[in-house]
Length: 196
Image 1 (cartoon, rainbow, N blue to C red):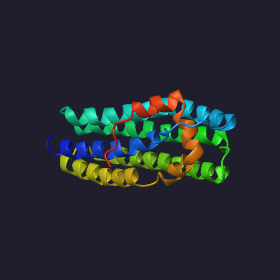
Image 2 (tube, rainbow, N blue to C red):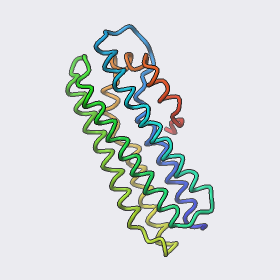
Image 3 (cartoon, one colour):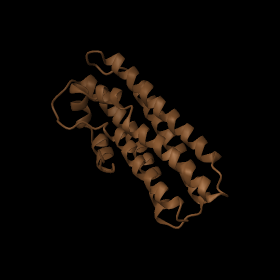
Image 4 (cartoon, rainbow, N blue to C red):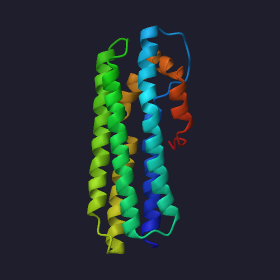
């Protein structure tokens, strides 16, 4: 099992970076904003919380598989399921932001659409990683470890990229409104610490 374990640890490390971006969906200061914006934030935060938990659980599953002496087949099954869960979670968050409509701020519609596109792109990236994991050769330890290494590299890129639109969406008044939502605070506190 030597060959697979360090690589899957690298996978887990890359993953925890990616999971954090959803949990960026919790602002930090609080200010009295308007009711419309607070209602928007409440709707989005309420939808984000269960998905953040799903992402956290997927991350934990991959990390657990690295610490046990797992066979390539077990690692493959766990990672594939985790990537599927993450893909579903990001898609659901994108749908929630879409359904909430544009926040009542300047350029709200553009910020919303950019964030939805970004979330859907991230969802697609995880779906593609799942497909790659599914194709790995679990009978050949060295090939499997190499394949896992490639996936870890892509995952690393994914966790580094792509949350600009989310950050833009959460700037200013939107962030303040989200900071007041209990569900956003809960989502953030259950998040793994960012490793940036």
